[in-house]
Length: 157
Length: 82
Image (tube, rainbow over all chains, first blue to last red):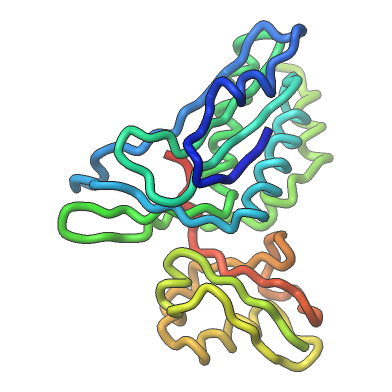
């Protein structure tokens, strides 16, 4: 399950979408709007997205996760528009037979999403507003080198 | 050829628009398009070093050659998530 939407995100729907009877672990990550950044009091965030590409890149990242980790399913939902403090902007869920792989795969997937998915937040704080510049997407990383991923996954631990 | 340009976040705010149509000769590249955009929207120029482009929803380097009807997105540093 993947979505880029202005509607509130439903964590249970995402968990249901990734979980299967073979899985002993589902790891669910919430990205939440916090009330401070760089010493400023944040009032709310405004998210912009290139929605069709954001969806495509999230799907590609999930495929990359499945090549690198023993994961049966992975999904992600990103919210856009105005979000208040405490609201959920990102949900990522990964299902795996065991917890260690579920944690590792979910961590990896959240990092990749933050590096590559074309979504932006504008911080509206007391006294001003600013587009937050996070990561310049790495064009090579976004090609998801399948051969490299396979080699890495097969290396002995 | 005609290139459909989409702008987002700080790039859209600097240019004052989220959409532009650019006419340019065949054989031109992503880098050529960025230079043309900076001429049309001078306020975009300071952002150029940190912008990347996506062509038809895939990230492409500056040397990628464009084709008639391509959709090019102007992508400032991303900041999704919480």
